[in-house]
Length: 202
Image (tube, rainbow, N blue to C red; front, side, top):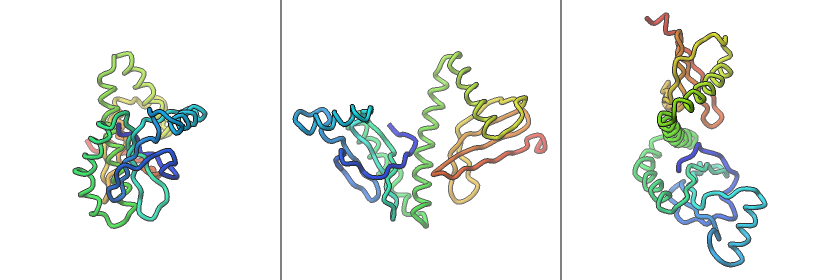
């Protein structure tokens, strides 16, 4: 499953690299589900750390950096293989179009963030009315805190969207109120905030 890209320091001593394609790495968890001392060691380590990561993951490494971005965590090799094939056909042909490694990283992480946001939006639509109400309250609280606006500003709706002000897109959230449009995103620590006055545009 694609996840919000998360930076990690190294590829990990308990991971086995199965495939490498340019800057992408496909790994499986060493010893998971196997008999023997190494399997016991890995299971013990995961128990002590109070975590049990999925047995497959896909990483991306920016040229010139020692850190990796975790893009996907999968429970089966079938799911991981499907994600890997998608990277090969949809992402890899485009990564050579950018002028710098940081632009490539921003594009890849933005693309994965978009998939995650769309999946979360679809899940919200499939939830019950009660769950949607809870989601709305949480979104409104986040919106008010982000933009530091009066609490009487009514949030009408909110959507996952992509804002493309320059060379690269920013994946984030669009908040619609009675008077304004607000956009917010954070990608690789870079925050973007935009406010558009809808009344003045009518």
